[in-house]
Amino acid sequence: MTLLRRVRDGYLRTYGEMPEGVAFVPGRVNLIGEHVDYNDGLVLPMPISAGTAVAWGRGDAPGVEAVALDLDEERDSFGPGDATPHQPVDWRSYLRGTAAAMAGQGLHASGARLAIAGSIPRGSGLSSSASVCVAIARALAEAGGVQASAETLALAAQSAEHNWAGVRCGIMDQMAVAAGEPGCALLLDCADMSHRNLPLPDDWAVMIVQSGVRRGLVDGHYNRRREDCEAAAKALGLSSLRHADAEAIARANLDPVVTRRAAHVVEEISRVAQAASAIEQRDLTRLGDLMRASHASLRDQFEVSEAHVDRLVDLLGHAIGSEGGARMTGGGFGGAVVAVMPSSQTNRVRARIEEDYAPPSGAPLEIMIEQTGRVLAGECE
Ligand code: GLA
Image (cartoon, rainbow, N blue to C red):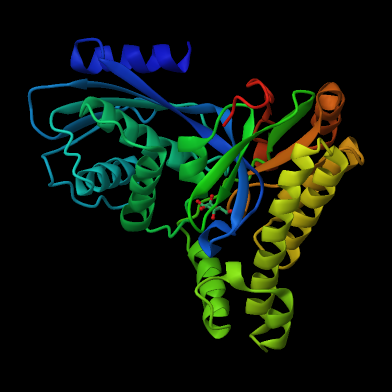
């Protein structure tokens, strides 16, 4: 059954009538630009076909009612303005946090009824939580009859992560899913949220392979990396590492760990600018080199990779050869690997990975291939 059908049926089952609308928001895969969004850097994510659907309607009771169709149809409800934090952090934290942030922007979704379902594997680094939050924000805006910009939705979703889930994430995921166009990479400048959709050539393919190692950002590693970066910027007398350069970092005599973190950020931001040019020039070899360098830096300098992910990246790299490349994607510590290659090579590469890679603890091997160039060049912007 399709996701839209599932969410409409679930709404009908729960509330006894058909929804008035459905908000769909994709997940994202990040092609390059990792752990730089919270340093005011450049990033290059793309929306994927898996996502979250929120069916919405309006009931008589004030406040918000919701059902999580994928989680044993758990329910939640709260009155206008009186959502309270939920412990431990779960889907209710995202729902309540997003609704509170939207209310903070003047949007009190009174009488909203929601049914939520998704198709993004959780804990895979493909932004299931950003997708859920932005989809809830969009559904609440639609139910409230207001137009909300991509930036408004993204900021509400980020506020839920920061203040209700305890993850001090950047703005990449929320903007990628709110403003990204299918078949395009979103070149986003996190310093001022300016962005441009870059169509990917339609003879390229984006392949996503799950390592089978589940990751979570709430365990503190993520926030610690952010603190290291903030410490580096502060020691350099800068507002963020976006304004740092390699020589200043080398000269500053910082703690060796902090030096490595900062070096990654500065180099990765420069790689994103080069990757955007490589896409515009249809240079897959150059993009592959940049992806390989990005992975090596995340593994050795930022230290957010993991043994199974490294092995999968190596296997993909060998199978692809020089035209294209692979790297970890998302926050790290497990999750998915992204690869870009000529679309003519996907069957061969998929067969090699199916033969050579077994996810740990018997998890099934999951490979997704995202279409590129669905939108004609020039139509993205
Ligand atoms: C997670 C966060 C993002 C970003 C990435 C790493 O996905 O939510 O804001 O920092 O990790 O690039």
